[in-house]
Image (cartoon, each protein chain N blue to C red):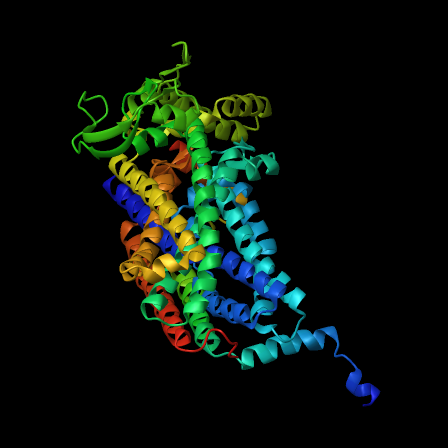
Amino acid sequence: MEELINVVDWSRAQFALTAIYHWLFVPLTLGLGIIVAVMETIYYKTKSEKWLATTKFWMTIFGVNFAIGVATGIILEFEFGTNWSNYSWFVGDIFGAPLAVEGILAFFMESTFIAVMFFGWKKVSPKFHLASTWLTAIGACLSALWILVANAWMQYPTGCEFNPATMRNEMTSFAAVALSPMAVSKFLHTVLSAWTLGGVFVCGVCGWMMLKKRNLDHCWRSLKVGAWVGVIGIVLTIVTGDTSAVTVAKYQPMKLAAMEGLYKGNHEQSIVAFGILNPGKQAFDGQDPYLFDISIPYGLSFLATHDFHAFVPGIEDIIEGKNYDNDGNVINTVSYSERMERGKRLQEMLSQYGSAMNSGNTVLQDSLKTAINADFKNFGYAYLDKPEEAIPHVPLTFYTFHFMVTVGGYLLVFLLVALLFVYKPQILAKAKWAKWWHLLAIVTVPLTYLCSASGWIVAEVGRQPWTIQDLMPNKVAISDLSASYVQVTFWIFAVVFTALLIADIGIICKQISKKSQTDLDTVND
Amino acid sequence: MNADEDKKPGLWSRVFHLYYDGFRSMTVGKTLWLIIGIKLFIFFIIIKMIFFPDFLSSKCDSDQEKSEYVRHQLTDD
């Protein structure tokens, strides 16, 4: 069993490592793609050589990041087939279909038009070139759409039916999978956060160039687009974050409770604005979950349901199956103990189904299939040894959530101030503290990356122990491999991805430094 | 000016020259393509082929066997 836990932990660590590294490249591609497209649109309308030079500068940075980041996501698919083989079989075509659409449609669209974007300046008409730039940016976002649809299905499995004969989930409605509330909110929140990161990145690079007093006009042009895209991105990220919270409250209440360190819920539940968790706290031990907290009354009830008076269940309520409407009536009585019993009955039925298949008893197969699918949402609970096993890592979920929200609030202020400086540059020109603002802009870039990674940690750690919510825990999804095998590939990936990241940062910094010393008001081919 | 000089190259010729001229005039792009090549070699030739076989295919010959294998894993039969 200890060996199994090690395999699960190492496989999770490997997936986390590769996913986080992959996500360091992706948001900049999505964000800069839009920014470059907007810049080229301005050039197309104004025919100004200055805007063309600015567009080409950022297009080079986009190209470096795209080239080094491309295909880093394919590693995750390798891991599914080797480390997570039970899961890969169990999800059937549900995971494969969105990824196939991504491969056929989005990736080819992106890779075709990116060639026109870089090689076609004097080969195609300005209008066709502009269209190619926009299609590259849109293609990148569509790539993200399909992988996020697949991820959303793992958080909220819908649009499918389990086939006990093949042991696979079969898609019954592509629309239900692609347009589930979880998929829509996840896609919008993630892509818009990438626009924010793109905007902040432009502000950071311009901050550095302004500190060096290089190409100030180019910086102001860049900031105009970067700050606008960033402001639109962060405002919409906050709006879609609110939608995401409502979706999580509805479909993954345990995750929401962990995000808030909430063990016992209430009507008119407050939200923790700042808090330090009690590290010794365990479910049902009666201890205060916080050593210190500053809370906003009614906040969590409103965040989760848009109703100040609604009941928000805590971790212990969810385990005990307690939930109430606004009049105090019980509306959910299925405890985790009950779900574990139901899961074990389903597991037994699945075993009987196998025997019925072998004996050719089709009548029994049909009745078992109906019974299994009627209660399939409890299937994964069969594998829990105790209800508390379904609690995610509360401190990691809590702190990363609060870090993400705090930095998100800071980014809104930062980008609004950046936008103010764009339209009132004299404020910054006269200010003695201008260099501190530029330094702040530089520091904000890595802070935004950490914020973005935190969002993913909340989403993925917060749904533990599930690989597929309620249907399959990690320890069942895993392949029968040795821990040492996974450890070897973990370290290979750590080395390869670190090398790629160093190359990415190194080449981008070199390009910025080199090009900032040329005249960026004129086009230098 | 004669008619041949006015003649526009065909679509495929223009597509070919888009890529040909584009690759020839690359500067930083050459370094990037080198990195992409090394990366894809490491990913697909070394990592995928040596360390990431399809686990179920290595254990089972058919989809039916894979179903039975996963049933066994999930039911402890």
